[in-house]
Image: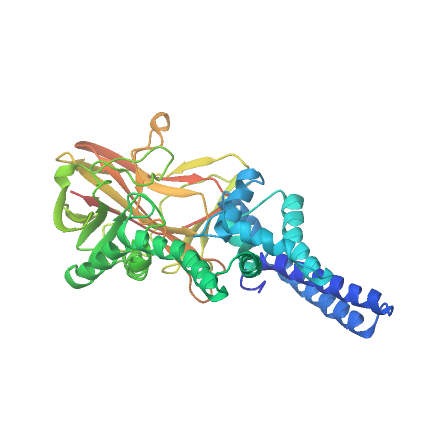
Length: 460
């Protein structure tokens, strides 16, 4: 269990403590303490904790990275409320009335010690670490919450049966119908209304996916222009998007770019996540060609030609010409082992906690004839890395530029032999009419940063 999800180690600890408590109670009642069973349980649990501890030690660097990459919920009343609601969804807080009755109905010391261990150990661990994690971390508690609710329901039926002339099977049927109402109502709502707002319904997602699979060629690049990472469309399009993003990064230039958006959040009025904070922008309406309406969903084609810019032809080993003088603060390395594509990757190592901005020594000039053009940048970096890259007109006083980050949840990939996973990053930046003098810019935030497969395209 701990191999599947490290937080399950909390459950293993709670289970082990319960076994100690249960065996201790048996030994005390039988006045044989400690007995052979207790000793065997102790040895088995000790070995289990040792192995889990070794496992946690081995993955500790990854756990530290996860803490940096994700904004974990602090321990407060809102966290406990959110987790409690998560465990009884879709019934809500009222289900805890049954859980409470079930708790009051516990009679044996073993039952009480089991529930106390399962509920108490996570709280102790959370308070000790000061980190609550995500609500789903405590999903292992769900069966026990449901068992307590079931015991509370059975006790409620006993009480009602004692004060009512209605047959028990009728009361049981009424309670069962009441318990199934909330899940059925939730499923109907999810099928007919978007969750969260601005996303597709299940029905719309199914129809949009079917249309795209039949009518949109595989050579077209799909962009989910949606306000939320939790959209049900993500589930349908995940495999296609991951494959097309990899193909794009590996040198297959798409024929067209197709945008899928919601009626309430069209690309010309709604900005998806900015590549930099507060840097997103809206696409011009005259660059969008509506090709299909499905419910509240819209499928647009980006009416732009896609032309390679830098490098002028695909080169998996293209490395931006960044010159760094010898310094104890920063070093550049041509990496031949940890690379995603081709034979080499670019690696920067810095010895300072300050963010550094590097620019390439070669200027790429281009004349844009008409308004509405865009610059598309695609590259690969280490997954979870905060350091980023962009081809742009570099002016420190006007940095960062406007830029959007497309399909951010589908770029992760791994392959045998890699020491870490890679992430494909695709951004689009607006380009005004006129002459542009562009350079590769590397914002180095992490101590060690990897970049590979850098390509740029002009959309005009």
